[in-house]
Structures are given as structure tokens and as C-alpha cells.
Image 1 (cartoon, one colour):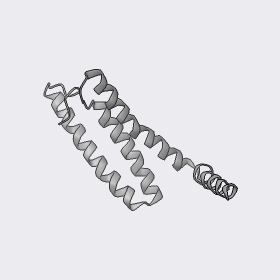
Image 2: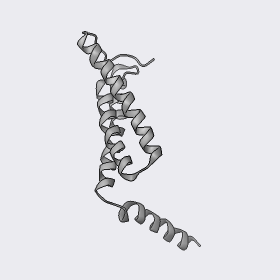
Image 3: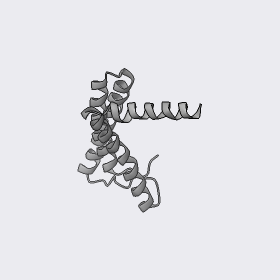
Length: 115
């Protein structure tokens, strides 16, 4: 029984991570990497400031990862993923416009606390 289970798990993992590997999977992995970096950037900035902050790099990583993940979702024809990423990219773009508008007005926003 354990041998059969380990064989099934091995077959599943091979199917998911090896047999399905193509350029779109690599795009999806790169997109997920960008998307994950936004949390690392935000965490590092917050640790340095000693409080919660959202640096502009967070929004740029959000946009980059979100757009690539949306492209991946469109290719895979996943309606749930498409709707979620479209909504997210819209929000990230809107937030970056706020940040850039404030910067143009001369206000620093890179260390603004999260409400």
C-alpha cells in the first residue's frame, strides 16, 4: 500500500513539475517570483523603518507580477485566475498613480505607514 501511494505521489509530481513544463509554465513561475518579491520588499522596508511601510517597489513588483500572471491565466484560459488578476492589476495601477502623484507634489510616500 505504501509503495503504491509513493508511486502515485511520484507520478503526480512528475506530471505536474516535469511533463507539463513548457515556456508558459516558466513565464508563470517568473511572474510568481515577481509577485512574491513584493512581499519581501515590503517586509524589508518595514523592518528597516520599525513600522509597516509600503515602498514604491511593492507596487512595481505587483504590476509586473500581476500582468505576467494575467498573461499566463489568459493562455491557460482560467476564468477565476483571469478575473482575479485583472482586478488586482487595476488596483496596483491605481495605487502607483497615487504614489506618483504624491511624489510629483513633493510628498514622500516610501515610508508612509499602512492604515
